[in-house]
Length: 222
Image 1 (cartoon, rainbow, N blue to C red):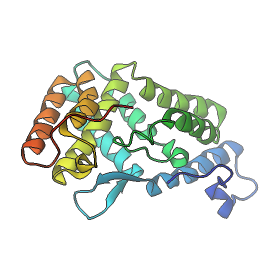
Image 2: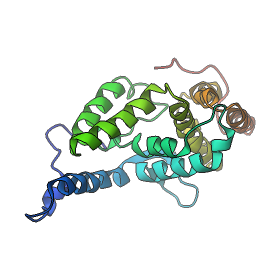
Image 3: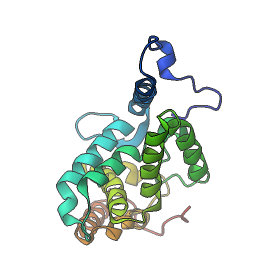
Image 4: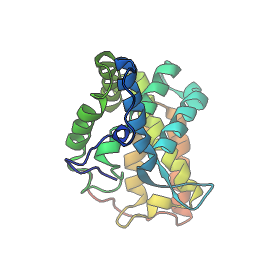
């Protein structure tokens, strides 16, 4: 789902808050209502428990839980609470920018521009001080310049790997995608955790052996 330019009426406009509400709370409530849209942004990854694809809100929750459970495998010490904040914020921009599938090179051409514009629009709904803090978290995740951001990105790559394993391939079966391409795009896991990347490679290798992904040369990267 991508919201077209000029089609960004706020959800709160459907039931405006009453006069007399504290202005700071009004801005915070407006943002919290607007990000309910995240539940409607559908990703490519299949769920394990039911026959449908996951949405961005489910994905972000799963990443937060993974950070809590898997932080012990980080190659560098990380602040777990800060890393949870990063994964909870990282996909909010997709409310306006839409999800960009990992293996869709054409869709990724203008991804950075779309998501930066979405960040400008969405975070501006917050009070100025919180807008700056939330935007800083999003920027940190994108830059991957801190141990926490690198681990957050690793979780963002590992989570769909687990879902695709359970789906006996899932998005690994995308036309034109090979097991080598999957390895190359998932290698960022190793920037944060050697043991988790070793485990991830094991799953990818075994998936290829079982025929859940194609062998051969990967397509050119975006």
